[in-house]
Length: 198
Image (cartoon, rainbow, N blue to C red):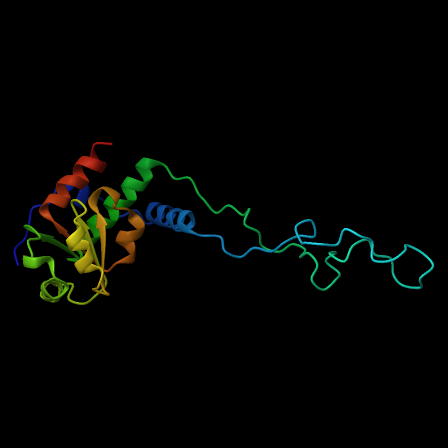
C-alpha cells in the first residue's frame, strides 16, 4: 500500500457538519417513495344513492354508504399520494457536502485509490478476492467507476458488501452511507472535471 497525492480542492476540505446534515437529509427526502395511500369519500366506489329516507324511518340520517362513518367508506385524514417530500438544495451546497465527506474519508484512511481496475475476466470471484485484500475487506464499500462497464457491474452486483456508482453521479448520501470508498485514479479525474469546475 502506498500513499497517493490527492487534489486538495476535493480531498482537503474542512468538515461542515451542518452542511452535510442538510444535504444528506434533503437527498434522503428526494429519494423517498410515497406508498401509503388511502381513499377519501369522493374516491371510494359506490354510494351514489341515499341509503334511506331522511325522515320517518326512526334511524339516523345518512346521505351515502361511503361516508367515513360507514364500514368500507372513505378515510378521514389518511395518508395520500399527493404528499410531497422533495427538498430543494443548491448545487454548490451539494458539491460542498460531497467534498467535505470525501475529505473525511481521506483523513480517516477510509478512501482507497487504485492505479487501475484491471481484473482479468471481470469475474465475481476474482473481484471479491481483490476487495478482501483491500483495507475495506468485507465492510460496506462504495466502488466509484469512471464509466459504466457492463461486465464489471455484473460481477460486482453479486458481492453483497459492494455498491457501484459512476463518478459523475457521486453524491453525499452514498458517500456517507458506506464505510469505505474505493476508486480508480481515473475516477478522481472525472470527479474533478464534473464537480470542481461547476
